[in-house]
Image (cartoon, rainbow over all chains, first blue to last red; front, top):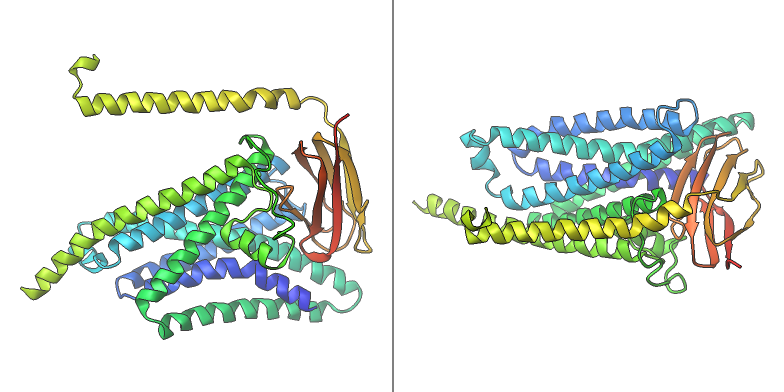
Length: 285
Length: 129
């Protein structure tokens, strides 16, 4: 029964992490609060999509074939990765200048496009893990109904979700205890690691679909040192894209990802610096 | 035509052409062996039994490309998962699906049911003879 709770927690925590971080970011400024309806809209859309995916996994609906599911999962992971990076870069470049920019109204359209990106990101994050949670709970509750323990199982599932909500709340608390600047940095790194993990999982699917080469497979075997079946290896796999048997192409994609992120962030910081300087000069005058 | 372009534009165009050529070369490089492997592939079956075990728990296959049909006979949802095999597949109660794998390296690849982590199995890839 603890296992049921744990699995539900594990499946919901990734989505709650994304939603939780974006929520704290948005809440930090009155301008960001305008994005909150988009955030909750994304959660709602994600739940609908999760339900639709769950019907496929349960074999009730077949709007996606087996190969279609693989493609869909791969594309969802790629889109989520791109949206996370875009979001982090945008926050880095506009975090300080957001207020003036929105007030001036000139970039209202840019802001609107950004909110759509936010909605899509939240939707994917919720749908990806949500569908598996639905299927898992459905199966667990259904099978324990025969043995009369359905209520207990449903309760265990709720307990897992409550634990995930607690994680969400701790994250919010974290945003209050440590300085905003540090919280921003920390969550930025967390999201970028997660985006890297999403990218690697997408390459896994693309390789097994046969549309991505491996070149050398595997480049190394570190399963003796850190396996990915459980414990730390599994956490690193889920949240940072660690693999015990990576293919060369995956390794190159992962390295290219971090180079691209470093370059984009440096460019965004450079763009933000003169803006902040101008703001300071304006305040002095 | 090139001579009328400013130097930086010309350089950028040349650079872009080089990238496109490189991409095409890489594409051709891995498509060639793929089409050869797509022919008849062996098929195996892995069953998630109602009593919470894999049947067989040790599945032996020759190196190469093959298909495993996954049958969930249990009344709960299961998730066939293996990072070494690059696979993750959720199956609702009573659902049948499949995975296609391509493994050239002989050895043992562990897999498990992510919804029941104590349920484990091993895929043994034998060297091609």
